[in-house]
Length: 192
Image 1 (cartoon, rainbow, N blue to C red):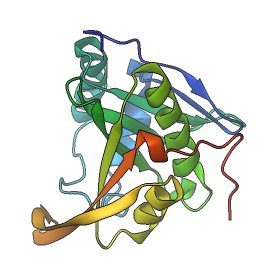
Image 2 (cartoon, helix red, strand yellow):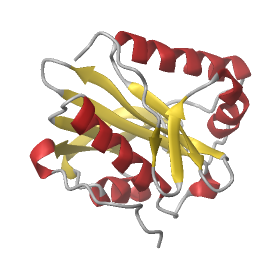
Image 3 (cartoon, helix red, strand yellow):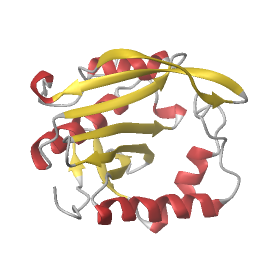
């Protein structure tokens, strides 16, 4: 894996995944200030716009360091920012990375998270030759668990009380996807 890897721009039938730009700060801030969206996160909602600006700088640094790719996700139809999807903690020795994502609640239930993650995973298996991708989700976040399972991830275990969410200890499920088990599909993931 190279020291740096250009952050890709990826397209699906309904979405465009692209590198973050400074102009995304307001949309990103709005997403990460929504307590309902972040109710299963181990970090509180953001309270200042500078946090969004630091997030965008960190995205660029990840790409420069060759440690990950975090992409803004826009709907093709109207160009609206709906969230982000990432592969982080790339490990060139083990050919592994971690998948993450966050979407505004108006985008939930339409298959966008699955569609975007599928495009990013396909790029990662092709472009950087990953063997394993791991993801974790709060055990109460059944919608996120369904996204991972639709992508072919297998639940491998439970991390008991591994983080604190809203002041309470919380369990996380660990999911894994191995390259030989990856089943890409053509076209977008249909919404329910």
